[in-house]
Length: 105
Image (cartoon, rainbow, N blue to C red; front, side, top):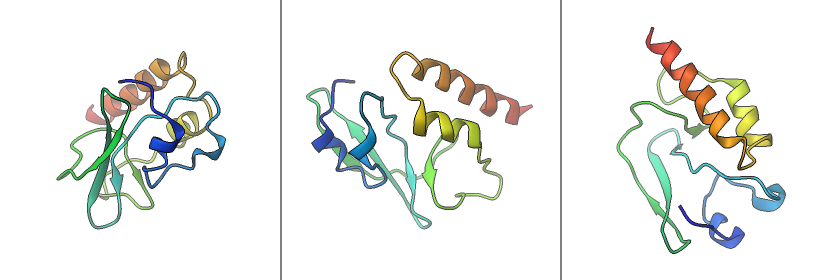
């Protein structure tokens, strides 16, 4: 993952890049309500849009859940929205993984 400019990040439809400042963006799948979209960063700092079939496990962006069994975790949402500084991101990922692991129990 390389450094991506704000102009490249503006290609991602769910991002409001006006207030990013020095925070890190985790590119997540987007559930539109009928299909999935995904943006990938390239080694040369570009963002490309792609489509995926489904998300088996993990965080995603959506207005409504893709499946009834999907869990919305407000704390994880808040952390990605407001506290995604580079040094904090590994902790957010770990906490999110813990929630996913608890769901398997």
